[in-house]
Amino acid sequence: MKKILVKNARLVNEGKTVDGDVLINGGLIEKIGASLSDAGARELNAGGNYLFPGVIDDQVHFRDPGLTHKGDLATESRAAVAGGITTFMEMPNTIPNTLTQELLEEKYRSASVKSVANFSFFMGASNDNLEEVLKTDANKVCGIKVFMGSSTGNMLVDNEKTLDRLFSTSPMLIATHCEDEQTIRRNQEIYRQKYGEDVPIQMHPLIRNEEACYLSSSMAVALAKKHRTRLHILHISTAKELSLFDGTIPLKDKRITAEACIHHLWFDDRDYEELGTKIKWNPAIKTRQDREALLKGLLENKLDIVATDHAPHTMEEKNQKYFQAPSGGPLVQHSLVAMLELVHQDKLTVEKVAEKMSHAVAECFQIQNRGYIREGYAADLVLVNLNDPWTVNRSNILAKCGWSPFEGVTFRSKVIRTFVNGNVAYEQGNIHESVRGERILFNR
Image 1 (cartoon, rainbow, N blue to C red):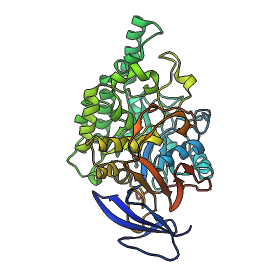
Image 2 (image 1 turned 180 degrees about the vertical axis):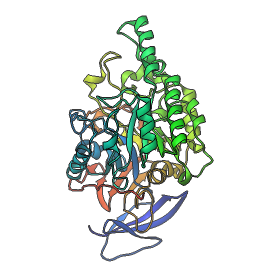
Image 3 (image 1 turned 45 degrees about the vertical axis):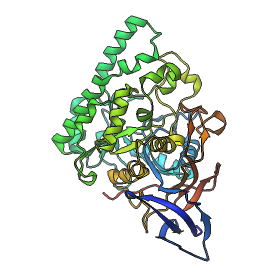
Image 4 (image 1 turned 180 degrees about the horizontal axis):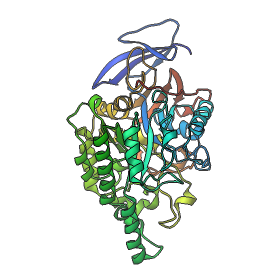
């Protein structure tokens, strides 16, 4: 690893934006200051552009193994670094489901060979693998994932005794997908009786509705409070759920945290008419009022972090009727610039973006030496020009599925360069194929 000196940057870090230089050495940030010099370093002039800590995305589905026609660790990690994401945490509903320690470690081995970005993988919980879950090393694995709603294969955990045992015995963070399965099935039958198999996509947020979300989220919170479990609820989608979270507690002291996802902050139910199943996600994108409440909840720290839930499918799969079209879509390449578009709209500040996409994720998961621009920390950084408009189209999409719900959108910000462990992984539209990410570790 060669020394790199980033000159003339605007450093966005820990609630402030200051002009400065950053010296990178051996994969770490060696020095931060003004007018730095080092004769042995490769000098990169940032030109007054904004240097953020690398984005940490705590919720992605990279489809590897078993679903690699949609995406894989190589393709999706490249899309991620092009979007300024330097670290990702990947979900266990691959094929086979990640329900044993052996399958979990195989993912880490695969990522060490394929991934340009840093990585961690969730251990999956089912109704019958508690003993295997309890073997998980909290210092080397980001968390336990529980689907309290329908999912792939054997991963719906709907047995109340199993949930109680899991929440009472797990010593590490439990991340939950919260939607009540019985409510969803009841709603599906109501709309099937009305429309048959031709249910309009606009019914998706009525089928996977506020009630389904709140019933499940409130159950998870109740279990966590009962057992003092470290709970993180993924992709909150309704205003009503915000009442479950406390924005007054410092993040370091929270036992219960929650996140917002890009699509729930950007789209609302008026967009189904134009975008159809391209924005079919679980939980569903809901009303404008919900979207606005989520942004307010983010600013009030009821929602702690921002993630993507990147979950690619092919357009052939997406272009099916409502019940057959799978939920999810690609987002990692456009998550940071989408958040910065909210900055341009005066809804957020650049400092808040760094907090919710980097600092708070590192704090929430107790990640070792990442998430900040600090001396001695890993040099995971992203340089962004806030005034270089570009339009998303099929020719510049890097996700393997080849499409995006943002096609046709012009973003005013552009990622110029992404550093992963001090190596330039992406610059000016090009991926540096020799770069490989690292397994991240946790201070627990």
